[in-house]
Length: 596
Image (cartoon, rainbow, N blue to C red):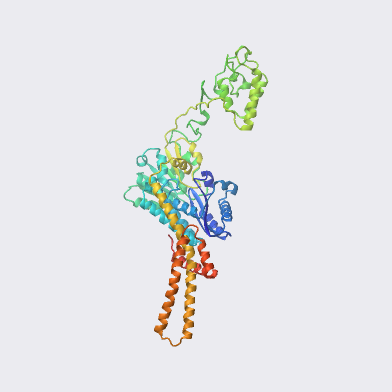
């Protein structure tokens, strides 16, 4: 049997896919049960956090195991296998051990060095033990991973390389300001009462917020967390609990809200947030332009000719000598964004016309092609030397652009994109931190003025540029050493049942020969029998000592698993006897083993 892990994380998958693949508690239980019921797997454990979903298993076939575990992840996550497969990673044997140890040390976390993952690994092991899906291999692996993680935090400064996801998220909300200064005096709303929400509440209290309101579906849990916060005499924070239906009202009072629940749907919609932000920015937060903060209907686009709000807002263009009027002067062309007025000495399109064409859809281009074909362009100034005007070419050019955009989905730019007038967004009055997976807060909130939202996706982007501490290299060395030690221990343990079976067979041979000697020499007294018995045992022990010690050493080396088979063959050991020793050891370990 061999260790295999199949999973996806923030490093391999877009947050949108990771969010959809998130597994609830019931889904994790069913996944474990179905995994051990599958043919290739004998043991299974699931590590599911806000930014990773990993399925560990002890399998007897690599390719069959990968196929089965991938299929099970797809079935239980609800994401199709074809969509999920490009984002999955696979680690096998020593690479799988290395991966889990690195995860336990915080090296693979969104925030390098964060310690919350140790608690999540411990919960994963406890769940597998409770469901009896973790056998000897996974119990040893996960317990050793916990020890490695604790060693990394105690022997190095990996804690300085990063912080908890909560602290990192608050730093992003503070946008460069010290969290303590930013949080001082604010009113906080924490939605959820689980481990992550509790950490968020405690972190906010230590940062200096004036009030923490805890909302949870089970009010008793919210009250318990509020009591713990209030009892912490070193913060002086006011803490109280409310029911979930009070959240909309509390949003109108809160300055910062943190949400981390196990809900499968949105907890806070954009409409709810907009209503909570009403009056905080001098008007509703809804209906604003996502980039500029200006009302969506008034988003300004600057061109070399000045601000341009669309054809309806332009002043009527004067008619030329041929009687042609600009777009605003003719009702038939009222919605035409092309400035077809005469520009002496220039090409057929003006700068405004080219800018408008660059943002037009295929259907609109086709309409302009019809206008040009009907002679709208032809009535302009007659072509002359040096003017570069080609009335017949206008219709062809527009038609060609229409064909291009229909195929390519966009019009090729003829010049650099024109600058956009960036109206400053109002300073945020409501700060939101979404640590849930799947998300609790509607991503559309990013477009609301006066609201700043930091979620798992934005945290992943921010963490990509986070500096790495020098201690990370030391932790990597610890991980490498521990992986080698774990592999050696597992390989040595693999041969132990064979060695035990060999010694048991030798003891049986000695007992049989002593019994036969008693029958042939009945006159021996007890002292003489004892001397003979000890002499025979010493001979057998001395003969077996060097080979068994050496075979354990050899088996502990990479590629040494074949020594157990060689030992069984050389001494003609019964495979069932070896298997019974393994079962007996596993049974003893199970009784002695408790939760990590």
